[in-house]
Length: 53
Image 1 (spheres, rainbow, N blue to C red):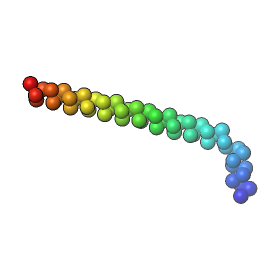
Image 2: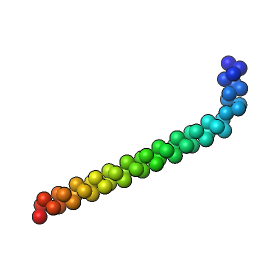
Image 3: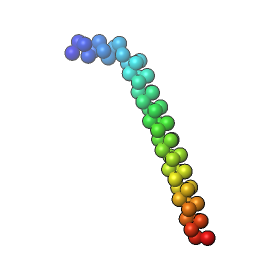
Image 4: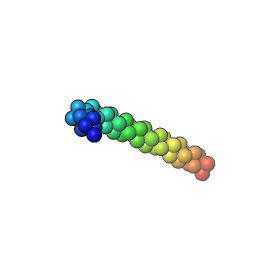
């Protein structure tokens, strides 16, 4: 118990930094996935257009 309380006092800044980096990484991954999805959709659309003509 005492250790946990001490931990809370000592490490909130470090925990906040870890959280921030995690959130940042998550945002970057999400952006990357969106770009990949966009590229895939664009290619699919291009293929469909090519097949139609």
